Length: 103
Image 1 (tube, helix red, strand yellow):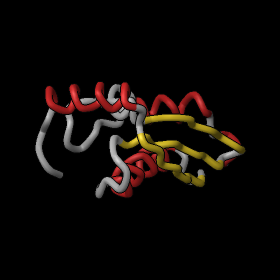
Image 2 (cartoon, rainbow, N blue to C red; image 1 turned 90 degrees about the horizontal axis):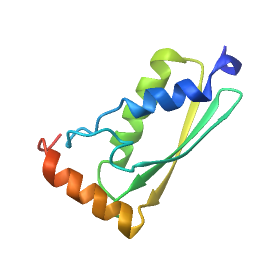
Image 3 (cartoon, rainbow, N blue to C red; image 1 turned 90 degrees about the vertical axis):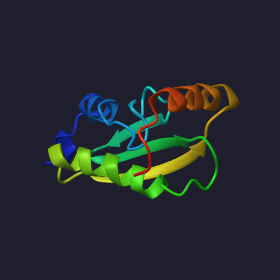
Image 4 (cartoon, rainbow, N blue to C red; image 1 turned 30 degrees about the vertical axis):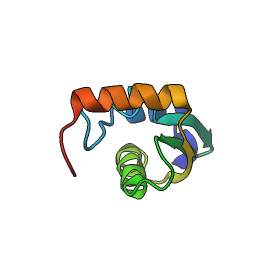
């Protein structure tokens, strides 16, 4: 049941998701902002390094797929924001170190 969705478990799931082009998780890259759970209605903020990145919907789909594997009745929605300069600098440094190539 959707109301049995644990916010802590949702966060654990998201922490395990690796970026498709970089050998690091979304959390390590500073890409996850606020995560909320309102009785199975999950809201996830994804922080991107630049506005209008072409794979943002793909990234959201990855998160939704992994959440729904464990909580199929959950409703997952996303907001996108642009990283701060400091977080973007860290993201780019990790991206250079762990670049895997195009998806």
